[in-house]
Image 1 (tube, helix red, strand yellow):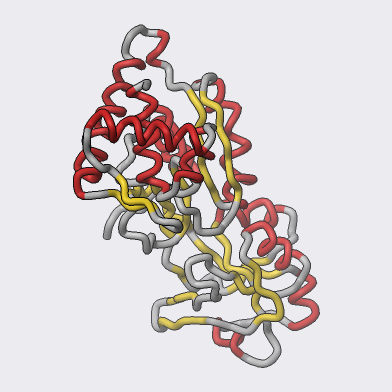
Image 2 (cartoon, rainbow, N blue to C red; image 1 turned 180 degrees about the horizontal axis):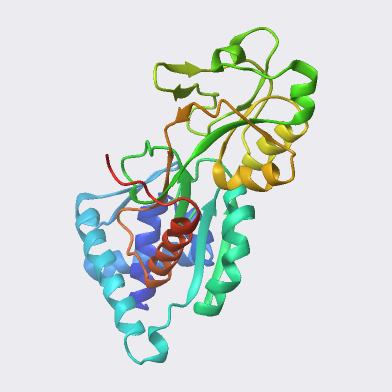
Length: 306
């Protein structure tokens, strides 16, 4: 039995809650993972996992051992990367998930510079606005806008997205230009709805000026759950959009979007990088988070607390 492989297999089973999912993320067969854990239990003479037909749960002894194993694997990883100057370069496969507009407009165009700095990091980038189970899907980190509701995750705030309200000229020609945010609640105007992954529902937008504060929900004929589709619907004249400044700039420059309610303000949307709390944060993850922070400082820096 390779003790390192056995400990790694055990840790992944605990994190994934399944031998099958652990085997998939480790690129091993389920039989191999099962045998490694069984051999580890035999060596320790302790039952680490309770197995049922549907779920694998860690025992009390297994939970204590898991915490030790995670730290040990982290120390081994750090030891390997500190053996020589060459090996201090972050390397390996990095699994991330990011919102689609942020990927296409900011992250992917900047990746050549990241690759030049860290040529030994291979990135598997999921591009979506869905909720990602970091443990089950073996994802190292996710980039998400809005306040995080999963308190079990660790997170670093990397930006604040300034928001504005916009519409396509074709929409304004057809329906007219709304002069007050409340105009979006009347029977004539429509918004493009965005279905947030956390709730599956569109949410109202809080807006304020010097004298008023209100929430606008609006009516829609189309709601989507993807950022790029959301922008495309607005450009097609399907309704009014709420967009981060970084996303609206190219369309404003080409005259394909028109700003609305410029005397009104919206609260910035925080942008976070989130990662699992019990997993060792490897150097490749650390440098990716630092890189995203540097990048967002150029496009949407974190606002100082008032």
